[in-house]
Length: 390
Image (tube, rainbow, N blue to C red; front, side, top):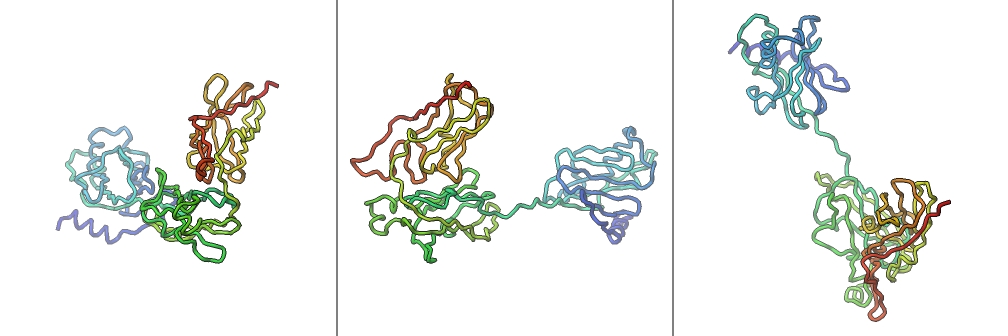
């Protein structure tokens, strides 16, 4: 048994841990030095030296610096001391410091080896590279909040009998899979509405997998088609329902959504007309302000693709920069410009794929009766307004 190995065993038997400060983990590894390991990926490893004035100058010669590199090693524990991490070694007033070229990673086990006896030898001697670990450390993985339902749209509590879809917004990315086992529509008496949703094999998620589109079965909504005649519509005017989401859904990390989210709403008369922006009411802002342009739509607009289908254009043809958003508690939307409104003429350009929450688009009604429907062929509808000069 080598002297080095015996010394490491004695050291391991006597090691004790000091209470951890807020910013790092400390461990008393030898009677004379203390190794301080980081608690965050961007940190460094420090070897604190208790004897004041015993460290070399920060401008130490190359031989001392080379000895520092070979006798103070930080490495991935699984790789061993023979594969030390690349980084910067520094001599400070009361410590040696190692900062890795690339930040430490959470969940990876690292080790530190220090040969203090050889580190401060001033004469030209050959020192064996530090090989046995004096301390190991792991930066804990970041904690992630459990998934929850952040919101359900439409947010209003009075919804048309021919509502086409809900949007369920989650706080974190969710897993793919059979989501409809964990989503239900409940009547006021506690009974379940049978098969109310279009049961797809994969959920309709956005790119981030944080918004789920829940379609009510279109075949039960459209009048005169098979499912509607056989089973009837999923929602009945005048009745109260609860949309229940969870528990049991999994997030992208495999954690279970433990709490159910419930949205209670009353069903009102259906909306079966084509969405007509020419009936919208424009409430103009004051010039010289960033007050919102408000547009009242009489019916609630679907939030799915709304933002990208509306733009405000000046009389010179340029798009006015700003933010379009639906108002959650009213059948209206608003536009807030990035800069103050200037006097002049403007127009609102509305793409025909804009829909209300029942699927009626600017182009045509969702549940149009044959021979009575009207449609708009233009790709974009234009509504003009003017902000006065005084």
